[in-house]
Length: 220
Image: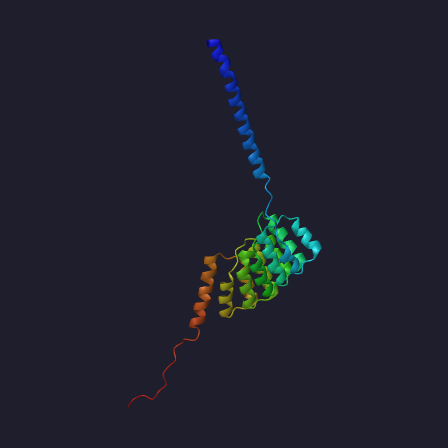
């Protein structure tokens, strides 16, 4: 009887092992299929219709862009950006390991008079969004292009630099652009700059408050 029982159990054990192997193979197949799912198809129609040349569009397709990036580039093209600038901005974002998301900053800078070369320089420093608002203010203050460029380059390099608000306050005290540039190049800390500007503002505010003697007739 013992011999007969052992013989009957062997096919059952073999069947169980076979089932386990089958389940394992199915699981591995499922993981493989999940990894091979096709990526969502990107619609380039809007970018194509924005006026981008087909050769440049072909380059963009090879850069594994997302739908969001296509939207950003389309906004740039509709705002008048050139194909080379769009491609260069996309490549700069790739160099810094992230997607291009700065169309608003680029459009704002371009509208304020910044050249493609200046905009690209900010992008290559990965500081487009960080610098755009302040850079626009520098233009509104009325600084010359050469001074603006010096300020922007210092910020790209991470050097201590006056903010656009501080520069505006200096101009309001009557300081010349040459003097403002000298202060900028000193590399003052934010606190040092505030102390310096506050002193000038105080001098200005008290410059026309000297005592005026009353010259009326004396009472008899």
